[in-house]
Length: 214
Image (tube, rainbow, N blue to C red):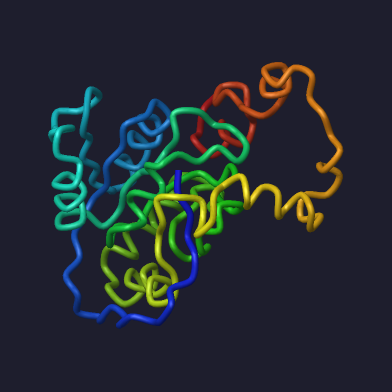
């Protein structure tokens, strides 16, 4: 839930000596597989929630995000399901802070978020390449801070843009931004949703190859 849209005016850019932190955090099953392999390649990872030994009170979400911003460079922002164009509030929530989301690009390119605002794991051929890049950013403040330059020109909204989401949908349908969709009708939405819209990690060659799964 959310969107990224242009600011009314630019704000100050980040400085090269702005303090940055280390490591990453995750909560999902796929993340657990990825975490294990990242650790094998020298990336330190802290795990919060039921799958880890660390915790952050759910009753004070704002304090948790501020803690993440103060102590971590990266956040493994993985959805609970791998579905086309499925992006939840966790992706937008972390964009509000100076922490770089590490995610998988199944639809994020359609959210309006700038490409240089996050790291897509599928931009790398394997986990080692991703780990090498994270370690590089960890040691190079100038390169790391490039991921926040977009905030000079854009801001994150809790809603899908300045207008109501259904207004956005209607505008896209009328403008033809969604080719062939204006007159399409689904008698059984549940059936459509189950036909190739979501994928299972163990059944997807691309994911298996990236994660080094046999």
